[in-house]
Length: 132
Image (cartoon, rainbow, N blue to C red; front, side, top):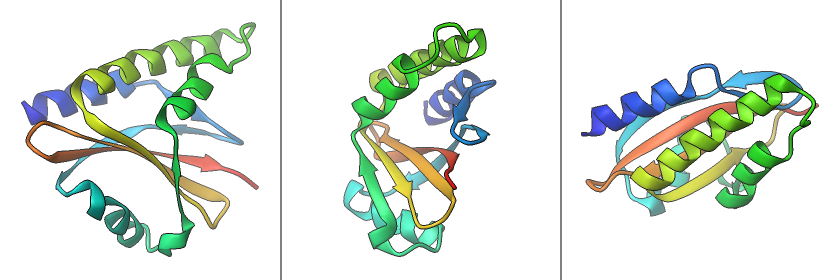
């Protein structure tokens, strides 16, 4: 089941972009069984970041900005927002404890969306924001 959900998420992410000062794709990975309380520490270690550089973002506000705050005259942006809405719905249906974390401190900012499968497996979706 884990591989099936990860595979479906990966398929839903094909052709989806995170638009900042650049465009970045989203990539899903299985981070194994890690408790929500240990997640931030693992992110800090994974990105060689100081824990104070980790900023948790409200997931509903994060996705709302990606889905609804787009230029309606830009067909590419509207299509991308629709794809994001589809995989966000899938995430909410299949993962619990969804968390969005930014690893700040540089102009290339990792943005991670983490959630948990019923067996405790953590699925992480990674992208990058470019902010100069």
